[in-house]
Length: 330
Ligand SMILES: [Zn+2]
Image (cartoon, rainbow, N blue to C red; front, side, top):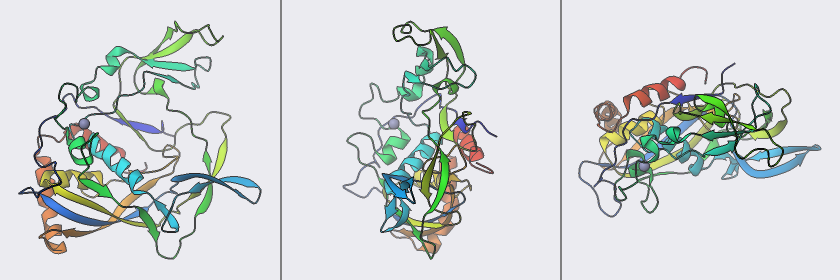
């Protein structure tokens, strides 16, 4: 059994600067534009919920997302996974974590809350854009930020081939994030407690291990609920496209790492990622780039990889960890 999640360290410095390539209204010399047709192969059951429930033979089933009438994954979910991975392998900002959260502790069941100490919130990644309003970090430059449009879009992905039916499987009920596990924590007295007759203690988290990625098979509370969910089966092919404009060779190299293509690693998507659900890998890419044949694009992969390796905005430690976490049994 694993913890159910792994951490990728945050960068000590975020690279925020002007990025002339981050535009849509004109072609930028030396950049690439086009479409990648992507085929992912699922290795575990994948559940991306539609938000609807159905009654099937007397039991409640959480329905899976449908794309063009088939089981699938919306482009927004795919983009979310890609962005989180791209952030981890570049010197990018990170969304600031919540200061206080309700938690469930196995070892100290009386404690119901955790808070982040100021020190944990002082990470450069949480404050990267403060005072640099027109600068962009690598992930915001590519995937967008506030009014800045993304240069990368993902279409919806649908299951291909014969086996187009969902399978229904039991999944442990989802719990809130365990804030007291995101870094070293101590038990402190809680000044806010007592009012509601709750615990007088709280977990205080002093530091953060980094960006959290749900993987493996984490522990479950002794009495946990199970829900029936509709899943894309194992071994299914999910097809869709990634389209992009004005992407630097180094950025494309980074996207290929984020896609788990070069080097190979798995992606985790949907619900239950910490309980043996959601793993898939990129099985096939077809290139349609402006001014490049598919063969020429394939031959350029090594050059894009090298450009990313040599890029000042790459975060080597993060990349190494992200890939290691997603190889093998994640
Ligand atoms: Zn950013």
